[in-house]
Length: 463
Ligand code: MN
Ligand code: MN
Image (cartoon, rainbow, N blue to C red; front, side):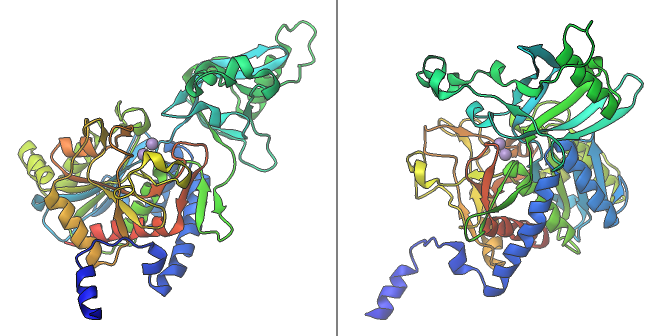
């Protein structure tokens, strides 16, 4: 009787919490790996910072710019590819792991500084899909660059050092919020033009000055960065949550931090590349920009940057980078669109379909298709390629699960998968499950972060 029951169970696809499957030795690795990830996430809040950090790490490991068997190509400081030559000839294609290093945030407008009611504030325009009410009354920092008229570029990081002040967006007290907020639809409660950053309140000591508070701020900025108001016009200043990523939970099994989407996939894929001695195929780790606003522009995944990198890869392999060879390489290539997926939230289960949604601690999530409303705008991964990754992950003991972006007709979304697939790359969405996606502080599980790394390592090393 007993035996018969077990045989029957073998037919059933059983899902198990990763902590019940993971080998004891690896459980320690999960926590060790997350320490470095937390450090990275605390330092790299913008696309520029992430690209800079990654290039520095690659250089330490001997990567050269544009040439050799291990190289990187950086695109305007915001998007970057890292390449390692593989055992297979280049004609057989490359392996690509493509993530994005921009995260939802709030950008300063071009002419941001103004004074109102004896306070100084910045006007902003939010970047990506945020729930605006989440971004008020929390400590904020500025990260970015100011391009001066004389060609000098000033790097700005303000509000991260413990000794430094932070900024914030104010909100109206509940006592007076009834008409203006509480009875409105949530997405109307805080209009975009209300996301004004409070930056000061102290007047400059000058009787003739009309905007004393604003001018005092300008004078402080001038002393600190050597800039004047017109310099804001040619600046990219991004407002992000201030402070470090940290352990979350009484058991410290989770990570709370800004920008897991999608720096968790960027970090794990690059780390996997660094830990690979000789990949099966030539491997490209691709960090794209502008994913959160549709992948447009010359640093987004719709640009030709990835193809440029493949052309360089062909040349570095000693071959003539002809259009025909480019097409051969691309059509023989396989890629993971490495982006986060929405984990089931126990408080909001109704938006997920439990047989197909991903859960925290069940490992890296393979998402056959994204899109919305009838798979519209999705890269629907072919069964053959999904099958290949499935076999690969099972062989390597990677803890993985499937995922989808919510119930059918509930909503949806996309990744850079379709832009990778569009040029001919066999592509599957594959990344870390996240809670509170696009909130100032998102949640991931340490086990899932580690399994994401393991999954990418398998993809790089296995044929
Ligand atoms: Mn993403
Ligand atoms: Mn996103």
